[in-house]
Image (cartoon, rainbow, N blue to C red; front, side, top):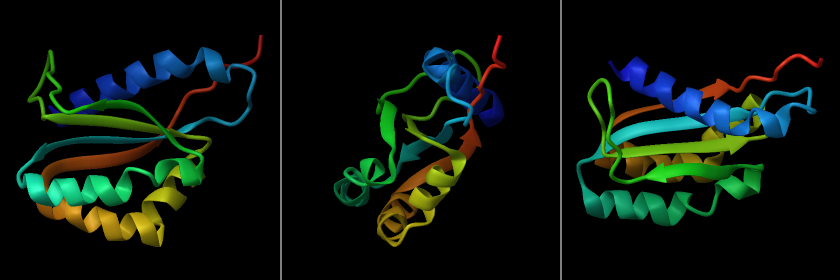
Length: 125
């Protein structure tokens, strides 16, 4: 069921950004999170530390919904999608020392998952 929710979130992100990248040959990278907050104070620490980091790695938050619902599967309370110029940029962000330190707060205060995936670039016509 979680795969369906992630698939739907990824499909939405790709639909929203496909036209913007039609002229670019490199696919964008996405970091997609879906989780439930178990400890609000710990999650607040995560947000304080992680919030300003994505732009430093070329990323931008395109979806951040603290009250997400799903039409299929088991919805989590948070759905977030960050878009990066490439998967490599998303991985550099995720593995950076700054995000690694912040991520500890998220892992300790939430239950769910995060994936990194490549976007779709349509063939040139």
